[in-house]
Length: 380
Image 1 (cartoon, rainbow, N blue to C red):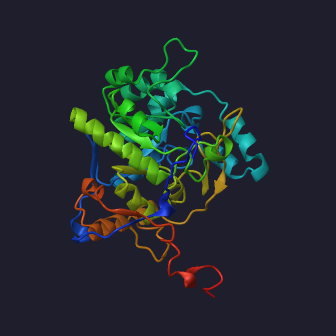
Image 2: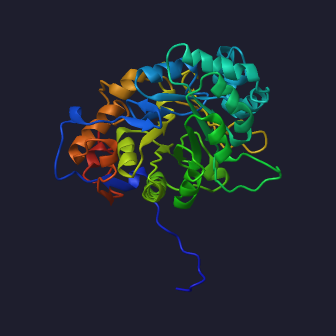
Image 3: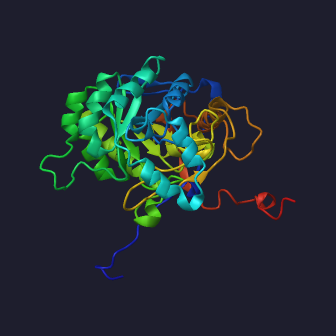
């Protein structure tokens, strides 16, 4: 092979791998699935994505009551409109061919700073953890307003975020300065690489979001051609986290964000090295979600180059049922916590960090081997 020829490195997604059972087993009720982000403790390692179709203030409160965290998008509808109910209805009733253009018009409404404080206060007055997100270009101006109102976690989130960024701005967002100013946990993403993970952690941030383009409503992979399958991306970032910890003694959790549909995907995320997961579409199907059974990406309404789409998911279950069951479905889409605990028991992992040591195999036939009677056309 020519030495100057570019080569392709294999990369694996959820459907390409399997988890091997452990040499010891544990009763599922004995495993600990809690996780900490600095002084913020989570009983379950689940974030609801910072998407307007998934989280509004009431959903964030319900998510807190379940032990997880719902992240409110403070660049979205809730800081552009005082009353969002009619806005959600307009988006839901838009015909497919006009949905994106209608959203582009809706999201052209300016952000109102007073609504940043109001939304945080709506969450906090109910005793819930207030986690909020901003795109990098808004974080420096708007995150301090949210923190003053009582926000507990700030997420700086873009399609791709790095510690080294070139722009026309003489002084753009400097994450190390934002960490010092806000004095609360800051989670940054998204990234998919070892090097960027370490460099972001060196800025003093408290968590990393992993994933570029795997979400069901994201079209970055089609529009821009970028992305790394989630298992490989998680393993890359986990290696960066672990080596940063060896060098500094500071442990910075990582969150696999996007593409998670089933309990199996959740379990594989942790086996690949995740400390928590961020989920969108399954939460958008909850009765408590605000978007009336629809879902769309954070860049769907981009004025020049939309990188998302609106999809109809329907409303299928309550938030409690999604996380805790019971379920009569056999496809792994309900009772995500039960799936995680049972898998940890089979692997012999008593907590999330021990789950990182689970052995995995490249197994592209894992979903089809021996399943001929489950395949369409054979099960009638």
